[in-house]
Length: 445
Image (cartoon, rainbow, N blue to C red; front, side, top):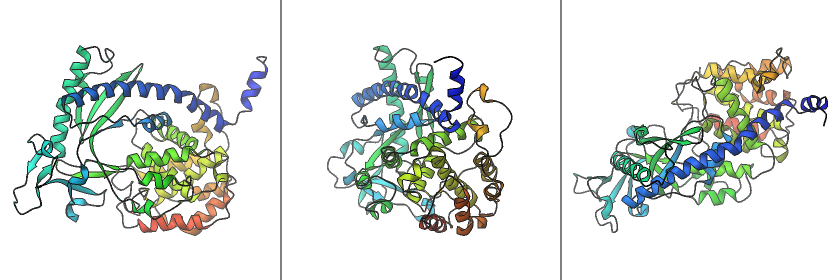
């Protein structure tokens, strides 16, 4: 191909696909960097297990590499360390409503007085005896104590692995280990990239997921995928010094993987918005903003609200489906957890949702400015890609969620040229979701 023809060919590549190609060009190297760093940490955790068999090594983490490759930011990655305990033999004691609040389900893990095979969990380093002799349990497994034991084991394991040449020199330093917010933060070097892992002790736990149990086949997901996913255990992770909480991160990642098995641009749209969020809305990570988990929840809801395969065939249309759901969430200040819709993911954030709404709206009305990935793309600001009528709808004030009533939201979707929607039931479904979460925190005006 002649050099004169090359620029002309490049121009023919739509900007959205050019941006996606740039993101995909980094995915393989990011996945490799992650896997090298993970291998280092797994080697250390194997030594932790050798020192104390109560702590296991989780090798079933292939989906974490996929998720890390999809992201543009280098935010911390959780590394779960399962505890070797028969969870069914433990007693789950839920605290009172005043202690629980509106967040995920929390509990204490009690050891029954007649519990067999739990002797290793009633030692002082991880256990606190009960002062009430009338209770069914003799005491509780304490998250803060478990964290302290795991931290000491990690330090000793790192020193051992370095001394015996089991890990690459310089890949991991014991002095980078920090206890932060009920998890252990550790930096691992992989080539030129440094990845921060949050090492978290977990108890594998059977837990009902009413949202999934009530749906034999959720629209937008592969047939049979929900039944397989619901059979998986959830994790109990430290919620405070004394309490554990239910974490469904693994189930959400499985759901994300199930969407990736479908044809279309579901995961591509997530990657694009995560990159735009990191580079534009969060000023390359310098300003607080949405997390990958927020955007993942948006994709999961969008997949249910727009279940038809043709909804995801065209890349720009796929991105705008996420944008419409995201704008509605920011305007109403409610992003329901996908598996626990009563929990609002925007409730306890310190984000300026009004300012964030304006940034997302600006991208929706004129995306080109954020889709430039190279200095050669700089130039005059292009005209908006959508009409002024639709732009006016996008600029509905985030401070007044009443504008996002069903009728307005319906008109917004109809006006977008990238949408071809006949099924208005999905609009009612979204409004129903947000009405159900109306009582959750965050002010409506």
